[in-house]
Length: 432
Ligand SMILES: NC(=O)c1ccc[n+]([C@@H]2O[C@H](COP(=O)([O-])OP(=O)(O)OC[C@H]3O[C@@H](n4cnc5c(N)ncnc54)[C@H](OP(=O)(O)O)[C@@H]3O)[C@@H](O)[C@H]2O)c1
Image (cartoon, rainbow, N blue to C red; front, top):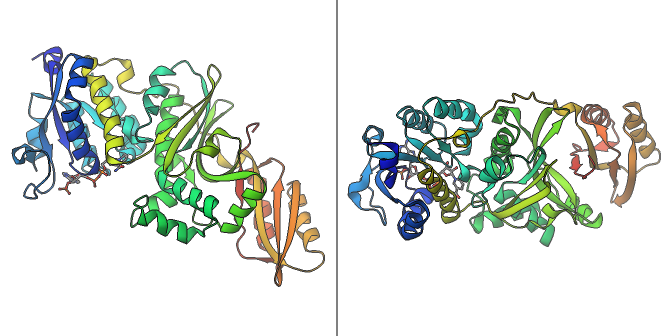
């Protein structure tokens, strides 16, 4: 059977029937007429891989389920494998074998792509097949297609992303109500925006995986999860939130991928943003990606970043793209031909905000200023407030190399007048 003939009736092997997998199954059924009209072919799920076939599942007939991957990969009629298991293994083995068998692959798996992306892209290229992964970043927002196809001539210089809905929900709640971090997290869990174990989200790791994927495709270079340093939101205090509000700013967990003299820096950290910044108005569990490029100026896309049906819509979009173009072309497997190097984190020049609890006695500010001065860190503004026996210093600095700021912070932390562990927050300004 030729590739064209196979695609007249695209048989799909679905790996996983959880939140997203079951929604994909339903959406393919509900949208079958639109899909046929868009592609001139019909799409049907032929087999579904799960761990335990004895569990009754809604919607799909029992005879479709299998617990044997060989049955799917060895079935010549199946032309598209849709991986919705998650995690590295066995997803990596299954996707590898599917590509080696010449099947097209659709996946929503950010862990897999951020750690094994280059390997899988190369495998797809060598086997003259396709790998698509729209749902791996920012759910329903078609950001992968926009970056790699619609904006292929954008000449990107930076990408800013609010790519984790859980943390955006928590920070929005803290900004909106003044709630403490722990209370906002509990509310997010109660409303289903945070998992029982929210570590991946609040530590920034989930966002780091997504930023690695975005940076790889925007800059055509290999960026893996290990290349992305991340700071989470666990240390954000309601006091920082109150100061942010006073300064006319908002606080977001940002993924930032930037080019510096032809080298790439990708990181995730909480950042203060001016209230007028387009990303400042992205609230709740919504995601957004703000793109800058020499040929596009600035473009922002926003929308739901997760959810079974929202994610499934991106997966189905990938299936439709494959069906509409049965012979693999260069756009169907991202390339990392630019091979750009990474720009070191500590050479990045950033603006910092810092809240310090200090002894309320004369000369404290002078001691602190001296340490900053020794490291050539220049203070832009200082605010001092009494808090019982202690005083609170809130400082904003002129842009400084992160290495110098880190060294100054170490010095400050060692001063007996400074209480607690200083937790600086970056201020993201457009000019930097
Ligand atoms: N949920 C979202 O909103 C969302 C958003 C964006 C991206 N994603 C991504 O989409 C993927 C799927 O997420 P999900 O939320 O649908 O996960 P989920 O609800 O946990 O479902 C996972 C499915 O995979 C099956 N599975 C797990 N390990 C397996 C194995 N070794 N062999 C066969 N089947 C196995 C499970 O089978 P059993 O039922 O038998 O255990 C289950 O049906 C993940 O990569 C996730 O990161 C999810």
